[in-house]
Image 1 (cartoon, rainbow, N blue to C red):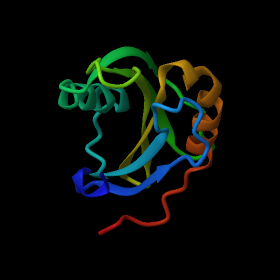
Image 2 (image 1 turned 30 degrees about the vertical axis):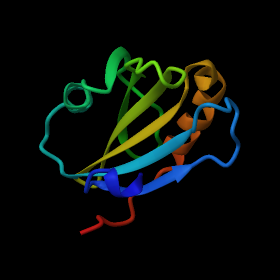
Image 3 (image 1 turned 45 degrees about the horizontal axis):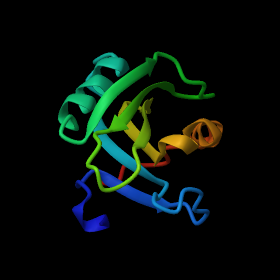
Image 4 (image 1 turned 120 degrees about the vertical axis):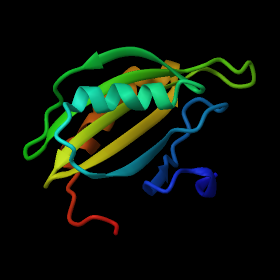
Length: 133
């Protein structure tokens, strides 16, 4: 599965605690390259467009708490494939030191409310020390 992730995925983590036995909770850290100056919400919604084969847009949160970086978040829901329970995802976009980063946190729909504070805390403590290039 890791090899099927895009080039920008610099780290991919799987939660060892499995709540819903038919679903995996995972987090992907994505390097987006140099900052284009485009509004972060526009970048987040363009990701939704690129991922529209797999996700549908649910809601946006224009500001996410981070002590050092500008950040936004959009909630996504996986399109129902009929094979697994519906997954939801919180996709965060951060502007850090003139670079863009994405953090995609995916879990079962029935677990998102419980896990969202943890995902938010992961984002709040994220620090970009250097680009992967």
